[in-house]
Image (cartoon, rainbow, N blue to C red; front, top):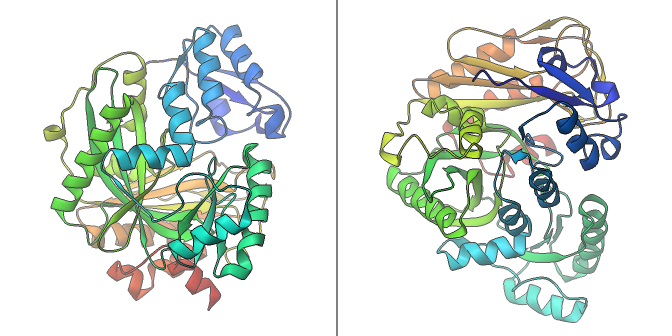
Length: 423
């Protein structure tokens, strides 16, 4: 787009590839995230000293922090994302569910609002919902503050642990309860909306291959969903954006039980898995975020969006492929795969030292084909071709999953990988 970039980094990320490739870079603190990437004054100061116009929050750390978005705007910078008010509304899962239900979306059966401190009342609600139930953090995400109670004897402990986790990760102890759906699929809908009330959807993604509620493989479009279902769900999500006055990129997440799409949350940022949507639509979502933040109207209408072929993403993590123990360290030989329909998003290079301070995601491998069979064949070839020496990675578990007949048939749910690992 011809826009100069400033990369913000911690001391330990000084040698990261994205820092080397940026027009300018600013160190905003030492390795611990709370002293650097979560340090709002340091981020604002870096924008000031480099005369930046706008700040893109990425998809981690402060990306869904309403206070940060507010501070960016108060400091006269453009926040490349939705309004602080929208982030705050959707960041509270209880509030988000209430708003979406009022807008016509369905929810997972659960508690009417936040859980109170009276355990007897909570037990009564759990009996009404029906065990097993999930205790969830209202400010949660990424599986944090989430605990399963299979019966009443486990409820008290589940609440206690969820409250501790929620407080540690989000500084918030508010909890709510939902019925545990045994084998649903995780389906999400990508939306774009501008500041003039226009909203479109870019189709759905299936993110059912998960470990401990962390996604490992995503694909688009989802299997087993008709074009009519897709159209209805997309219309409901774009209508919800318009009702909220929402602008920017966003993702509506659902649990699908084969009959009903149950809304669980909205992510008010670009998703890790956005490349699969980009592959099948030809839309650069980050580019669209920038246009929207600059005050431009959407350049496309819903009728302009064409869905072509199938795309799959494998998240490559620096973890042992069986124990999932983190594997930081120096990268030896590094060779990314290539060829038609193959994309690699990564900050790796030979000799790069992967730090132990952050998330273990080190690369995203995306393949696109004219249909799912071709996309899968390209992914299998790309995984075979990819070389990352010196550390352990999750490439072998991806290869195992892609060889499973059930996965090849698309007959998976959010507990599928856990069952494989248990065996």
